Image 1 (cartoon, rainbow, N blue to C red):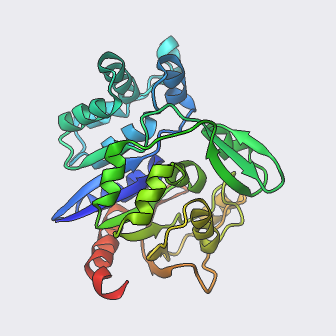
Image 2: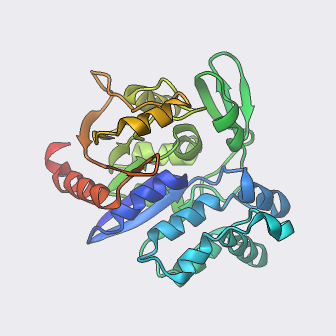
Length: 316
């Protein structure tokens, strides 16, 4: 049984997990950032002084074996007319209540995972309440995860935390025992790197003998990676955590012009490859389209990851 760890956060990581969970004979672990400080998550963490749970909730729903009424209500968000509950996700409220009553964030995640019948582990990268800080090449300083995606004007030079952060022991053990570690899919500076800049996790990744695979976004992202190519993503990872990536996976699915035009309104474009690359690169048909949105398709992701893991020992 192969031990697979997926490092990231947000909807991108959930898309990757939906494909990986279908693969037989693996133990799947999701390592999730808790740096989110916006929306329902931000309001709850400011009230209870607990780690952000929004990305944890998304991952739970993605890793559930099938969509049940319980997994559906975990994602339910109260409408604007719900007064104090307006904008809150029910799953966030449940996680907050369990953590507040038990005092243990990791155990609260474990309890809900059992109720959802999740076959695998969901682990926060830290159990502290953390705040991100980005320093841009032009000297701009942006504080907070929600502001990095909105307020950054130029390229980010350095990502850090406002205070000292320690990794959860469960996260360290998962990395050290992994056979394969997937990074992504997800926002580079607010989903992937927040895990890697925690010193103990960076050290664990350097010691890990797992095959390390980066799954790239299909499009560049406003506020974080406008103008980036694949090499820029890989370089940013190396600059913050000097690990050797064995493989980078990029999508080659043709994107309809109407969707490209929609993304272009925000300055976003398909991610390109610059040769030579900082890692071996493979391209796959990975995408599907929902409205004007580009997303990773579960079945295509499953097929890609099965092929990569089957051939990894021989070819990476």
